[in-house]
Length: 69
Ligand SMILES: [Zn+2]
Image 1 (cartoon, rainbow, N blue to C red):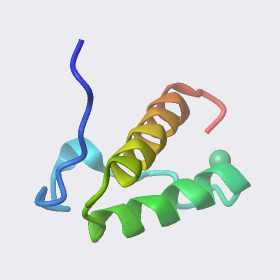
Image 2 (image 1 turned 180 degrees about the vertical axis):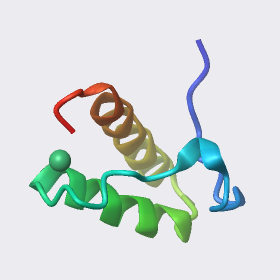
Image 3 (image 1 turned 45 degrees about the vertical axis):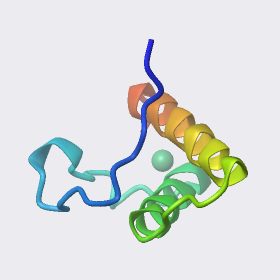
């Protein structure tokens, strides 16, 4: 099992990563959206920051599978 790492060089026009939950304004989706924007410009420099990215990636993966969103 490999650790899913977020590529900061990925282009936003990738159809695979399209955000269709723009109408949902619940806390989770809002945080997710903010994290996405922030993470796009964020480069982890320390082990702690890498760990943070991993946690967010996990939360994102969970939110994507949640049908209620
Ligand atoms: Zn939501």
